[in-house]
Image (cartoon, rainbow, N blue to C red; front, side, top):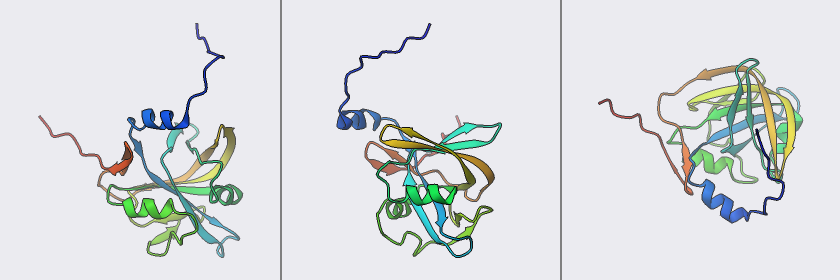
Length: 174
């Protein structure tokens, strides 16, 4: 039997953030093109809430903040590419987390099948069409249907943990 507590107290956002900081998250750059195909502006945002959703059909998701200025433009485009950042990409993450900056100024990229930017040195990439958007508190759940994907790098992923960035090391063989 499953029970759901309906009288749960309000949880302070700072307390929740402090507790959840003990769970590591991978960092991705979600990119798209805003405007007409072939003539639009590349846009992107750093995301720490990317996840695999389904293998059949191939679906992935992420949770953009409702206050994001980039998310409405990605939503309007109806397509996006998830670029998995490597542990050496802290500067890329910071650039994609900054409002108003030219996030692509020093980056090499090519358009993926949907036209969304695939970063040249991303560990891997997943190009998607926006399938569905659901409100989720102060965020949205953006569900994407995978159109194409690939692996480019061999290093470890960029990880955010307890307020800082790090990487993952393969365990040593015993």
